Image 1 (tube, rainbow, N blue to C red):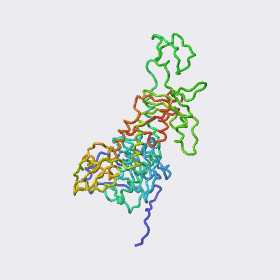
Image 2: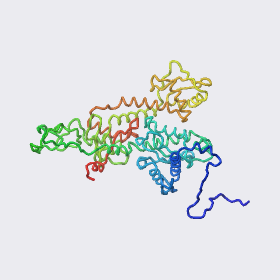
Image 3: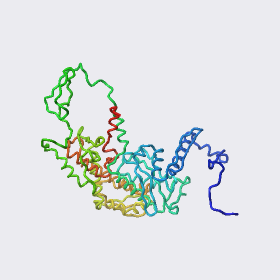
Image 4: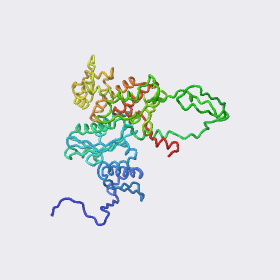
Length: 504
C-alpha cells in the first residue's frame, strides 16, 4: 500500500526499456485479415516514427525493418535551430533552406515551427505536419487555417509545406474526439485559428520579396552545355560589315576573311541599359543614377544609407529587356531575371488589398433579396458568421429554420451566383470553420483586375521604368510570387554561372 510519485521504471543495462510483442492478434484473429501488405504497414510505421521525431528533436531515433536500418536521426539541440535541422533531415534540405520561423503566442496559446515560402509549394498536402502538445494530429480546423493563411499566395491546386506545433493548456483542448486521437477539439477554436493565420501571414509579410532557392535550382537545371553542331562553319558563305555604330562590342578589330561570318544582330544596338555616362550627355529617355535613387529614397529604411550603385539593391540594376517580358538585372554577386507582367500584377494586387483593408468593402444591394435554402445546421452556421461576412461586403440574415436571406453582395464580384456562393460558404464553414470561399472569390476577382491593370507582356520598358519596378518589388511584401504562387523572378548567383562555364 505504499504510495509514491510516478516515475519511469528501472531496467537493467544501458539500453533503456525494451518491449517485445508476439502473437499480437492471438485474441482477435479477425483484425489480422484487415492488415495491409508488409510494405504498406512498414510505410505506416516509418511515417509515425518520423512524426514523433519531428516533435522531439532532442531524442535520437533509429528505425530498423527486417534487419535493415531505414532511418537514423541523431539527437539535436533543443530549440528552433535543432528543430530546423531535424525537419531538414526528414523533409529535405530544400525545406530547411526555404522555411520561415513561426513563433507567436496569444492568450496562453503558443504556435511555433516552420512554414515554407509560397514558391516552395507542393502538389498535395503530404508535407503538412501539425502537432498539439507534442502529439501529431490531422485536424480539419488546423488544416483549414493553414490553407486560409496561404489563400492569397497559392493556386487552389498547390499546397504549402509546414510543420507547426501548438502548445496549449490541456484543460482547453479535448484529445478524445477520435479513436486514434488524430483529431482534437479546442474550447476556443477561433483563437487557435486566428493565431495560426496571423502568425503565418506575419512571417510571410516579413519575408518580403524573397523567393525560394528551388526556383534558381530549377532554372540552372534547364541550362545545358552546347554539344551540337559547331557555331563556326568555314564552308558557309562569309559576309561581314562593321559599318554601323554599335554598343555590342569593340569596333576596332578586324576579322580574318576566312572566319568572317554574318551573325544576325551582332551589329544592332544592344538592349543593354547604361546608367552612367562620361564625357557626353545622357540620352533624354534615360535618367541619371542620382535621379533614380532620389526617386526611391523614401523606400530605404530610416537610418540606412542609400546604396552606392543600383546593383547594391537586392534585385540589382536593370540591364536589358528580353522578348518584351523579361527584365535582366545585375546584382553585386549575380543576376536576376524578372517576369515584368507577373511582378507588376502582384504589386497591383497588393495595392488593391491594402485599399480594401483601409475601408469597408463597397457593397451593392440586390434588387430583390435572394433566399437561399440550406440544411438547418448549415443555415445556422452561415447566420452566425453574419458579422464576419459583412466585413467582406456580404449582408446575410437568418430566414426561418433552413434558409438565409441575402440582401447585399460585394460590388467587386459583380453579377455573381448568390446561391452557389452561399452554398460554398456553408461548405467551408462546415469543413474549416471559416468562410474561405468568399475570400477566395474576392481574391480571384482582385487578381483578375490586377492582371488587366498591370504591365502587359510585350510592352517595351525604359530603363527608369524597369528600375522603378524592381524598387517597388523590393518594397512590397509577397512580390516574390504572383497571385497563383509562381515565382516573379529568378536569381542566379555568380558562382552558379561560373559552374555552367567550367570556371569552378
